[in-house]
Image (cartoon, rainbow, N blue to C red):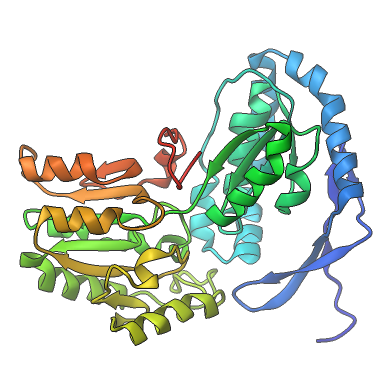
Length: 383
């Protein structure tokens, strides 16, 4: 690559001003693997400046009425909406999702009233950085009178004494470290963690409704995606054949191409799980789709955050309940159930026994609706 190429260089936004950072890191376009911009590699000095600015802004911001804060946020929303296509293009280039998905995600509105507490530390994940960061800033933090510092590096932020609130979306392993580091200060924690979402499809389900590649939405990197699909054995052959046929229509490539629905980066870790499953006895039907997975396989137990789903037949309710709950996440963040006999004691028992934070019946999760649903169940999927 020519040394004459000039990259976009991003700066920190602190106290109402753009501030250059002494250290920068490369940001790669995941669909091409090429560097497309330089981003700040912020350390303790930059963090202290950001926290100090947020702390100084807190008294004035928290004193404003909800109507006044709404006016500011609505103006910000109008400014974003006026350049929505530019944001969507930047999001696609930065993260790898399709422009269509980026536009869809940025059409959501989030607003909740809470009592202001202070400076909130916001840590967003790599899979939905813009969507979840705006969600954290707009709804639970700034709109309720708090000030905020957003930073991808978890550990520097959570141990800062002037940050009483931490909102984190990411892995359970990282959440444990955050809890340990923040325990000294008794910080308030809001955590949306990992899961291995099951979908349970009974023989009387509407097949057309079930042949849905929700498992592969946004490269399978959204927490609502179905990771494991359990099919009652009587309809298993038909479901598997139709599911595989539908999956084969998907293509990989640059996400800005409307005919390409997946991207080619982030493959080594995902393919590693598939390769391991094959050595354990699983069968690949299409691309990364896996069949004949035992409950003990790593592919069935660990969150992959990729376009991979496991399809398994079941015979009895006790069996499928055990499998659905048999992961260290204690079920999943979401569980999906498909059937038409709504008065069936068997199906109602499954509904009430499968663990999860949210339950969807005859419907795959809607990302536009899910943000308004609170995480009430304190398991390894959320706190």
